[in-house]
Length: 142
Image 1 (cartoon, rainbow, N blue to C red):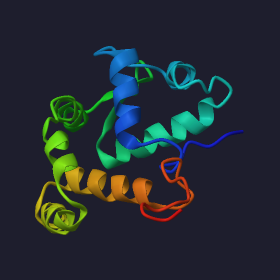
Image 2: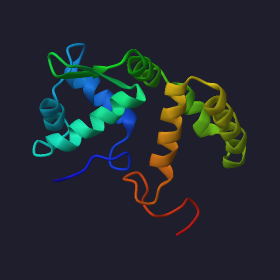
Image 3: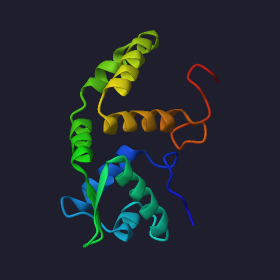
Image 4: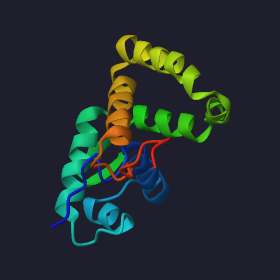
């Protein structure tokens, strides 16, 4: 059985997949597993979805057994879709990113818990050597 940890798949990518495949109606764990290309790993998808619910990104309809985005998850997807500031960040020199990170950590400490959780988890995903995002080489090293 495969696993579906933070280091395998970003939270935001899971939210986008649920929104795209399930719309407002939602998906069962089996349907979400199939949408992720993991049809034999329904249990892993269900477990990760339960964590996404605990963090406040997903909701679960107990009666219909459907996963949907929470209100906060929908706000994150909407903001992510409109994120034009990324282009501006790409133009900054690496040295200026220290100030950006200071601002991000301030938002982490003083912002909404849902967003703070996503910031923390996104940093973990992007920096852990065993993450799918990490190729084992740091910029500037060959």
